[in-house]
Image (cartoon, rainbow, N blue to C red; front, top):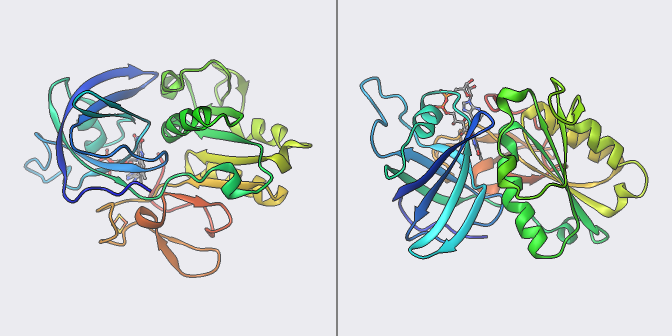
Length: 279
Ligand SMILES: Cc1cc2nc3c(=O)[nH]c(=O)nc-3n(C[C@H](O)[C@H](O)[C@H](O)COP(=O)(O)OP(=O)(O)OC[C@H]3O[C@@H](n4cnc5c(N)ncnc54)[C@H](O)[C@@H]3O)c2cc1C
Ligand code: FES
């Protein structure tokens, strides 16, 4: 797992474009290492952060959606949904402005064979803004020659971004309003895929709103399919100091999602319905 260098780094925004109601933005990280798929960064803008009312004060967590070494450092891509003061401020950044980056943090995805010895391929299941970490994971799986199927679900047309990050046309879509693909939930598509042989030969990777993750968790546990979830919890620090991100474990006790996750095996957690997460 890639370890974050000490301290936060001031990085320049090199791109900020609209994508189906979300923003895709890229920063050039001159000094940081290349993140592993599933890791995240804590981001805060250089200006306009901690205004008169102190909001937003803490940096916010974002999954790395893409990363590529290039001249002058590593380009990091993020997918941002404006839901409050922190995400709105980040989404409104203009090219050339700077932001503070801490990371890469946390533990990312395991390979299919690490999850299940017989897994011949991967099924990626994304919901809403949760498609972000699956984009970088799909690229890594493709580079490793792992057969991968991608299922993405959106609530409605207004919140349906991030497809551009996948760079492939073989994506099965679901939407609750019926504007694209299957009308209904992305978990309907997963349930069909897990019928028959696919259940024993695949590893499932999911990221999305808590209710979707919980449905994926239940489907996979019921069918004994190996599964990892990229989860969210309210994160104050991102590196283990505040305990704001504690989630209950199936075996009892808690784990800090920022240091032992955010990617966790589905059978390790008691539930994916984490209070205060999802939007
Ligand atoms: C590991 C991780 C990866 C994430 N990756 C992304 C990403 O790639 N793109 C993205 O847009 N967002 C991502 N998030 C969520 C993002 O961090 C929150 O949306 C953000 O902290 C909200 O800050 P705010 O100031 O804009 O809104 P706030 O004023 O803090 O909250 C506004 C609304 O968002 C909800 N909210 C608050 N904190 C969170 C949270 N941590 N997760 C979900 N909802 C929250 C609140 O319930 C409220 O309804 C991620 C969160 C985590 C923990
Ligand atoms: S976010 Fe502070 S301990 Fe996890």
